[in-house]
Length: 388
Image 1 (cartoon, one colour):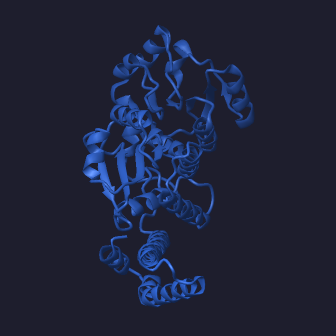
Image 2 (cartoon, rainbow, N blue to C red):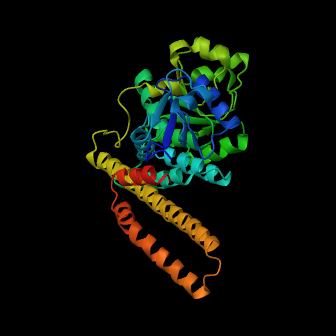
Image 3 (cartoon, rainbow, N blue to C red):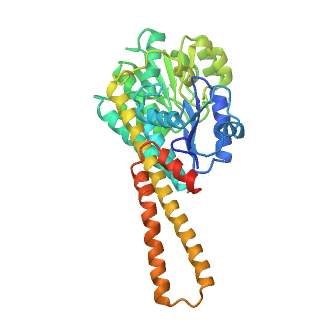
């Protein structure tokens, strides 16, 4: 058995080092044959697999063909990364809330599939708790990727105030973008595959409803934010209008929703979700990466998980040691009964009680040391000495 926490391994791909198309292929390989006991995390910027394994982690990288730029984190590094993701310090937008929903969903999916390892279940329970606590310290509305997208748009267009902005997509990210853009003073229109959803979001936010393919009107917008779970099909009129305009387009969709032809015509006026991962100067009041309280919280949570893991290993080793002693004792008694088949029942009972008491006295010190084990050394020594 590998010592704690070396059993925890994280296979990590992120938009900072791995392009969206390669992350998508990696995610597909993981879904085809998910590692036993693993938790799979997919967001717009990351695809990660957390798993317990006694094997050589490098073999996992070969098995799942980790793309160039991916990382394999083992032991404490993997534990730290999981907790950092949960508290939001590893996000493109530091402290954003969406990652907590995504992590909870990943854990629930693993549990539903019956493949959730108990070590990982405990790790993510502690990580999610730390994430909730870190966010409870922050005041006001928490930032999102939509806020960062709007900051980029504002820099590219000089200002969003009084400018026309189109939000394509009426899901959670589209809603966040519409609300934030209106608060920034933009004249917002909303488009969706569903006219009903577009109309509903427009009514709720005070925006205007726009056709999913705005045609020649596409070029009249100073900026377009796309947040879709699929492609954004555009006709020739919209494509030509965007090509001839100065419109800035930010595509938060993964994979990208903007058609390839339109992307080519837009050139550097198109900003993808992966581009945002490389933007410096993260947004929002939670963007202080030097927040000592969050750093201390991460360290405390790591220690709590390691203490739990070591205690569990100690309990497991203690149980295995007692089982081993009982098996050895029973084997010796069985030989004694065969050599002396005529022993009286009362004498047999006395011998059994005496050997059980003797074994427990011999085990008392090893078991007490396992109970005081703080770094796993006693647990490893017991397993080595007694082959348990």
